[in-house]
Amino acid sequence: MKKYNITSIIIGIITLIITLTLHLVCHDVTILNHPIDLVIILPITLAVYLFVSFPYFIKAYKRIINGDIFNEVTLTLIATIAAFAIGEYIEGLAVIVFFRIGEFIEDIGYDKSKDSVKSVLSMRPDSVTIYKDGVETIVDPYDVNVGDLFIVKPGERIPLDGVIVEGNSNLDTSSMTGESLPKKVAPGDKIISGVINSSSPIIIKSTTTFYNSTLFKVLEMVENATNTKTKEEKFISKFAHFYTPIVVALAFLIAIIPPIFLGISNGSVWSTWIYRGATFLVVSCPCSLIISVPMAFFVGIGQASKFKALIKGSVYIEKLNKLDTLVLDKTGTVTMGNFEVYKTIQNNKDYNMLELALAGEYYSNHPIALAIKRKVGNISLSASSIKDYTQVDGMGIKLNYNNLPLYVGNDKLMNKFNLDYVKTDEIGTIIYINYDNKFIGSIIIKDLIKPSSKLAISEFYNNKINNVYMLTGDNISIANDVAKEVNIKHVYADLLPNEKGEKLEDILKNKSKNSVVGFVGDGVNDALSLKLADLGISMGALGSDAAIEASDVVLLNDDLNTINIIKKLANRTLFVAYENIIFSILVKVLVMVLSVSGILGSFGMWFAIFGDVGVTFLCVINSLRLMLFKPKQNKK
Image 1: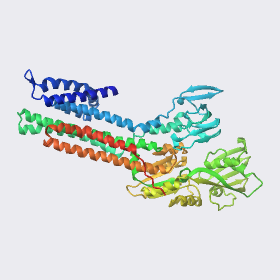
Image 2 (image 1 turned 30 degrees about the horizontal axis):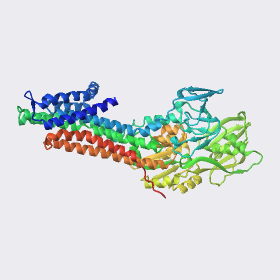
Image 3 (image 1 turned 180 degrees about the vertical axis):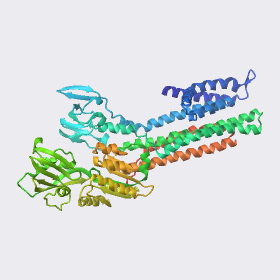
Image 4 (image 1 turned 180 degrees about the horizontal axis):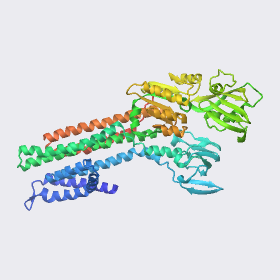
């Protein structure tokens, strides 16, 4: 089809040059008492016209039988037939040739705009090498089950999420997180799909099916990114739906009504006004609007993916542009989420406090639990010694360890069950341990602030995000310490998961009419808030599946500063879309008025072609300018 398009355009342009030259040079020449236009130019232009336009007749027929009568293809065909009917053969051919050129330019534009999206989609794995009893078997990614072992060799992309069971290597995570430095991995390390194994073969135990893997969800979000239309796109669709039949009716009236009053029996009058009606019809085609506005949003979404942000629909570009309030989760969002045991305070030395802490966090993969497990080292426990293991939301864990009651959690847990403990004033996440109704001691755990958080939040204020809140389940002293460091003025601490949602609802209720409130989080407990917010933004590299699923925008690099980048990109995208709308309408209205008034004379159809194809071309080029977007960053 592409070869046919190029061939038809070349033949059309050559024919236009030849016939236009013949018309201008030999206009008064006759052959067998017939003008050269009728004997030579008509057959040539008609043959080429049919060659170039026959796919459009098929397309128009299919649309008409499906109820879509008034569309840009039908409008163009009516105008060209009218041009041939009144003897304007060259103009009739020119309209269809330039219409095809316009479509060709549109296809090139979409191909260009898809490049960044294609770079993400190209990460889809074709196969997985299953490793069983030393034997390698290549299978489809969809056929891999949880628990299967698969081998990934140097240079290959990791197809599913999993845990390394054998081998040490370096991973190139840049395609998923934007991090340029290689990441060292060893047995026991969790890895996400989509990253590339750089140095040595590794054997991985899959923890998800391909359908539930990080990579699959990223691919699915990219593929569905343009399904949700913005207000501007919906307006253009509705506008075209009502606009097209109106301009067809107006073109018909322009061609019919004036001759009735100016000379119903005068052929030249009819030719003049039919020509003006056809000109009006060509220039009124809404191609530039229908094509360029969605393209601007598509390019914007593609560019966002280059900055490691997946925007799930073009409607969210509009919301990003209006974003003026951000509510941030703390752990994993403002901070690294990499907890470390900072200090231990043992009150009862008859027991091994770290062993009890390990028992309490035995089944947990929470960052705090992982910090304790790293600190504990080589202490091993038997699962049979742990019974009645129960998680108390926002408080901690209660269980029986070696048939005695064990509580590991914060002061709320101690107070809820009226347990003995000594409160500490240390700043950090405090884990109290009570075993056999005796207070054993406390563990102070601290989280590191992300290096980019301070600059990113400072940039929020420069980027018209005037209200920044932090919600956390941590105690107020930790929350205030972090907030002070990164310059967040509104802090709410000691919140249970449901209380986070309630606090967000309060912020949403008190916002101004045109305000957009965004929530940024990464945990399972953030899923509700991500759904409640006007704009949900999740951390994609370290975030939970539930958070990613519930969000509207996913930050693959877990960097808050990406919000500033895509907000500026959203602003630029909307600006380009409005440029296209205003420019298209102004040019079309101007050419319509001039063509109907007769000022353009015999050049009316050529101006109409520019008003349609030329404007479409310029708007497509304008949309593609977004591919050159580079954010300017204020540095402090």
